[in-house]
Length: 104
Image 1 (cartoon, one colour):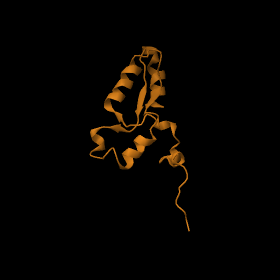
Image 2: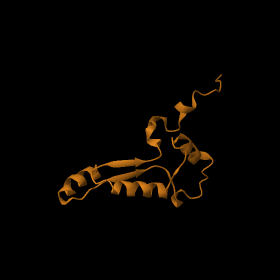
Image 3: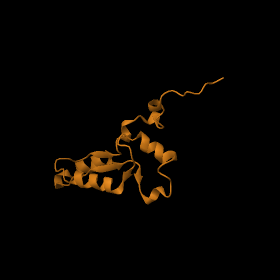
Image 4: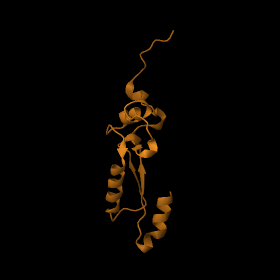
């Protein structure tokens, strides 16, 4: 909403306002979390493009959005498609199918 309000207020001055919403991105902020196992591997597996983002991926989106002169007040998700999945199914249970374990 901030991007939309700022875009409306600043458009008379020909100032465009957009926002970038990055997904899980491999940066030092993730620390030493192994990308091949655990939560990060599960995120990469659920991401349609099959990997975590990088700082270069996010920078590319920012540069590209900056070049679109007729775009303002938008939020561009750059998450490799992860946002296409329902947050209700945040661990991808629906994609893996039903559990095969038998309950007594």
